[in-house]
Image 1 (cartoon, rainbow, N blue to C red):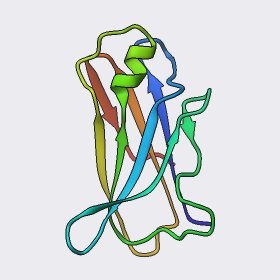
Image 2: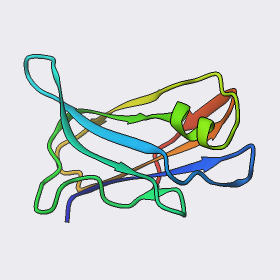
Image 3: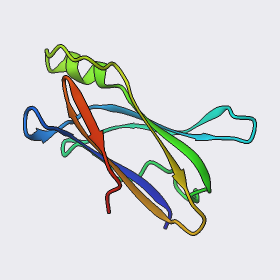
Length: 114
């Protein structure tokens, strides 16, 4: 099964960030970005499967876009960032990528998860 997943943790609260809108896009040969899927993080801060059913993970550049302004507004927190974009490369033979986001009002970090 091919999949791309993410997990957003609010490090300022020490809790999962639920309700964060997330978009997955893929870059096509012309350089344009096309929407693959969109979702919101669940109560555990996860989007466990962003690829549509029966879709396969395609080689090339992909981008996760997190609407953190919506999340911070819902939490009544003033954040520095409005959007976090993580662009990553899918290589031949990869069938699963997990891209976590550690978030706070004034910083963020990401890494390749497992």
